[in-house]
Image (cartoon, rainbow, N blue to C red):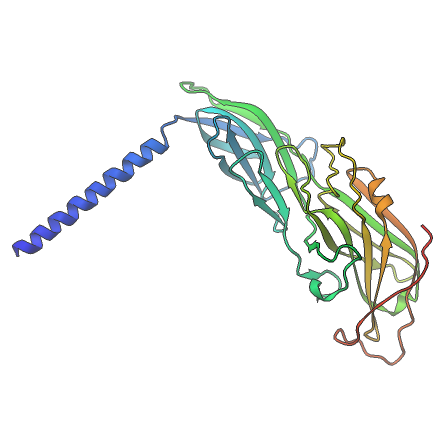
Length: 323
C-alpha cells in the first residue's frame, strides 16, 4: 500500500509542477496589457458588399508576429489588443478561391489564387485541354469571386486608458472586372458546351501595398452563347503581370495574353482557337477590361452524331482574325 501512496504522491507533484510551469509561460507570453478596441468596417464606398466574414491582421512595429482577429459579417466588433503600435490590414475571409500566405510579417503577407482542376462550362479537367502557346507552364487557377482590402498605419493601443478606442477602416475592392465578347460566330447552333481561358494573369498579391506577385497564371472561366451569333462571358482577376491599381508606376511586362476559346460540338468533336489580346489587356483600365473579338468560324456539327465528351481529340480552328 505504501508504494502505491508514494507513486500517487510523485504523480501529483509532477502534475502541480507542470501546471505551475504552464501558468508562468502564459503570463510571460501575455505580459502586455490587453486594451479593448471597437473595430468598424465602413462600406460607404461599396454599400453592396456583403462578406460573410472579415479578418483583421495587426502587425506590431516592434517586430513581433502578427495577431489575427476574425469577425462574423461585415460590420466588425470589439477586440482586445496588446498595448503597442501597429499596422493594420483587413480583408474578407470568405473566399474559397483565395489562399492567405506568409501572414506573420507585413512585407511578406500575400494572397494567392487556388489551383483550378476543372473548366467551367465543359465539366472537364483543366489538364485535358490544350494550353495557350507560351503558357504551357502556367498554373491554371480559380478566378476570384470577390476581394476587399484595406490598410491603416499608426494604430495605437495605449496602456492605462479606460476609454474604449474606436477604429474605423474603409475597405476597397481589390479585384479587376473582365468581360469578353466574340461576334460573328459561325455555326454557333452546333455548340454543345463552351469555355475559355486567359493567360498571363497575376497569381497573387502582396497585401501591404497591393503589388502583384511575379507569377503569371491562366484563369479559366465560363462563356455562353446567345443562340444567334455571339459568345460572351465575365470574370474577375487580381490584375495582370505586375500592373495593379495601387502601383500605376509599374509598366506592364512583355508577358503575352492569350484568350483561348474551347468548344465541344453536338457531334462530340472538340475545337479550340487562340486569340492574342495583349494590347487590349495592357491598354485597359486597371479596374476593368473589356475584350472584344470578331469572327470565330466553327465547323458544322455532323448530323446524326451523338454528343460524347470522350470522343475525339482537340482540333485547332485555323483562321485569320482581324484585330
